[in-house]
Image (cartoon, rainbow, N blue to C red; front, side, top):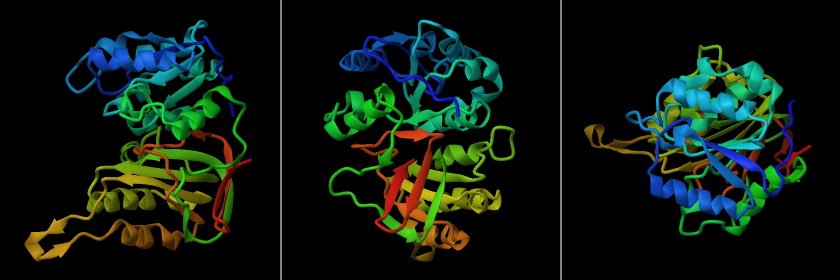
Length: 311
């Protein structure tokens, strides 16, 4: 794996917008909060652009990614926000340049599309963690200690080793017993399914698959998990970690006086039959406090405990 160099105080950080735009006030507030970490944000053009629900044209957003990796005076890249649209950029990226210039790259949600290809085509460690427009920087509890410590360890520290620790009061749970080891990869469920059948689709062979989602009704979660199952993604992986599922609930169905299946039932019926060691409730994804995860790093999961450990 291409492991990017850890950030240092004073480093210049490209802020890029691969997905949805934001307003100028939030952008400036986020940039000021980033400076608290002694990093200098460099706002790339896509941060200021609007094209419907996208932060500029596809070519403009892709150019910012390519330029940020190519620039010798940029030491890291943090995505401005998620939303929608990163998947449109995959055919437009300069993978040779990116592969030759590994840098700290941070984002989650829609940015899952980029995590997948940077892992698959560039073999680069990337970081699933808070973006500039997120609770980490703009929320009422911004710079919350647990989330900040995890973020700083991932970006500034040596590559993480040892167990992942949830916030206090949040316990890991076991769905399928066992032990497994492999590269950690994954992200937002909607994005994991969006590239199936393309050259950019998720490769789970020999890996530990992390999945999270936000504000999708249970029946849609069921559909997307089944898409992964039909594509062999649970068959091929070594183990599974289920993160946060914020706002993903069963809906009442008045038309037949019933209710959708619960998430727990869906997990049991769709994922458990593959008999891969499966851990639940890792607090990463659309939740706060949150862990920052190092995708591409080797991890071991063990239902005894249970534990998830960087090795």
